[in-house]
Length: 207
Image (tube, rainbow, N blue to C red):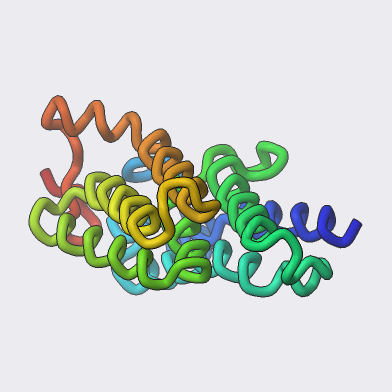
């Protein structure tokens, strides 16, 4: 019963739209109506600036890390079933971020920051490899979407190399990597057509 309640709590936490609140508090706007219309840190950066984007990024990552680190003990399942309960809480938070509750906040982010928080807590070394890949790709190409997808691939590959292809953590990492790519399917189309926006200075969309 406590575990079920914590799953609900993880979903509600994941659904909390910090970027939406940032837009309302800082400029009185709905970020879904500006820029890309996405409630992710990249759109926050373009519309609200770097400070707001970093704050939202950290809060969105915390939505994934907190359920992984603290909810198993809160639910009384710490140590039970190995990694599966922490993973279940983390994945539920990611789902909440991508598909917020009740349609109250239509649309969410693409799950990258929240998934990063989950794996920072579950697998710090693969997460570091993923982060370095993301930063390197964005520095060279200025495509955040490409960096996010290649970072997810690097995380999955690193976990598989370290744990083995059939280890529970490997299965979860591959599934999460696939999910991140799926949430970027529109970006893949724009990348192929040469229409994807590059990361530019705040307040404008670079091409």
